[in-house]
Image: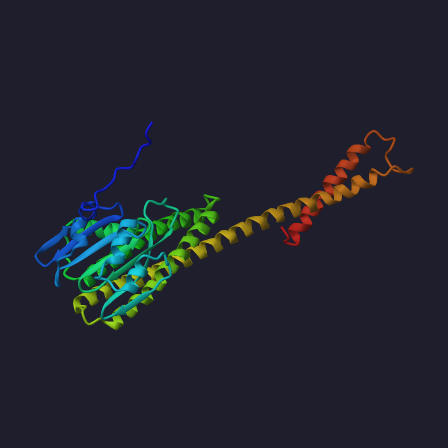
Length: 344
């Protein structure tokens, strides 16, 4: 029986297949111009762009796809050091700006996660006057929102303005997550004040951890974007820079909201700890009073329990009841003494 063989490809047909076959790593590609909404591009149009400023393109792809990586390695529209950067998995926040273009990383939230998670994702980007290229490993909230905005027909006039739109989508994703956490903190605050639930401390610990993580995401980006607006590349329009500044202001506002929410969660944890401490003190006080009430009775029973000669009442039928009465009277006397001394 002959072994199965993979179909061979004619070397003359391979360039055509490379052009028309869209790789799985190509998420979307758009062409923007001033005439109207963006136009969706095919893989062949991405490989052989014919657009000049003020028209520009946006390519969004997975950096793990071999076909996309091979194309990017040979693409002469991007400097060599930028191509190497886009294909790395470096997750450190950074931003490098020059007259030739701007590239760096953005921290974002991954898509498709449970409501209690806030896992970090990383987006590598590069843009100049001709194009915006974004590369990611896993689906991210910001680029997914930007794709929806572009598909709905919003007009962008230059790559810097499109990058500002990406920052707005990034802030929207963070804002939605922060609002969800704020609602959970509100519910916990209400239950703490009404003393209804016992699992609030554990939930607050999880919320504080998520808030701390998001704070670590947003803080570096705020400082990096301030550098971008201060450097002002020569090819970037003033209007686009103003939009980036607005996006930075939104991130600053989100940071302030995060700080306030973190402090609220911290204060609620302290309130829960105070309530638990107060409850424990009440329990210890009740145990101490019970011990004090039983102490005289324990003493009397210990004395009459001694197996020695001369104990009174051994041959009297009413001795037991006399001893029980003495024990009750001593307990009441102890209770009166504690009340008088204001110890209970």
